[in-house]
Image (cartoon, rainbow, N blue to C red; front, side, top):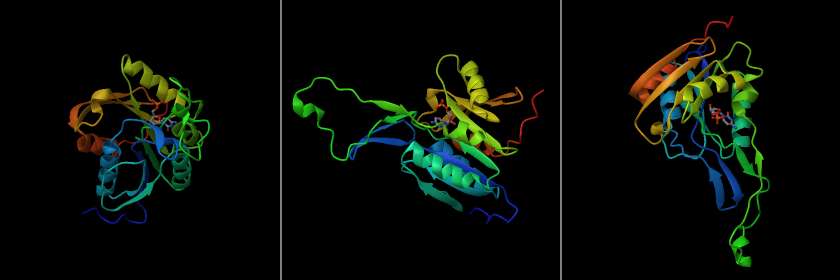
Length: 219
Ligand code: C5P
């Protein structure tokens, strides 16, 4: 059981899972994401007495005890839910695999392109808002933690992402973390700190992430 948060508890907002961007009522673009990391973080935060809002894309997971869950579908829904919850929050942890693009138009009926005999089709996409970067712009003293799933030169890319998005920390992991119980991550701080957590369960990683303090101010 998680303790009921006391009135002075931190409010921690966590996003989890993929987003879906509908082409028509039955088809969508999405990302590979089980949501397990974000749910593990929500469980760990509730267990330490935080007030937790978990904003989840479509996933097949049980809400951890003591956690307020808000279900969303698209990146724009998730942005609105995060902005609302972040108003009185102390911490935002963006572990969701947010879709970067959405179809320029959502069709009201099924997309019937193949009915005209075409062998190819194209879909016009438009850029989704970057939730982390948008919210981090006015975050003040509040702690904002992002994730980066990278292949290749992950550290360099994750450091650049941390700067570009204005986060306090970025948690770098590689594709082996997908749908798996264990992961190796590196927690990169705005202050230049780097902490590697080797092949640990998502619950163990979550327990480390919910104890992170604001990084030292950069020089
Ligand atoms: O750019 P990339 O998708 O690799 O960035 C990953 C981080 O940014 C994650 O924390 C993810 O939740 C967040 N993100 C976001 N809005 C987007 C895309 C990613 O908040 N449109």
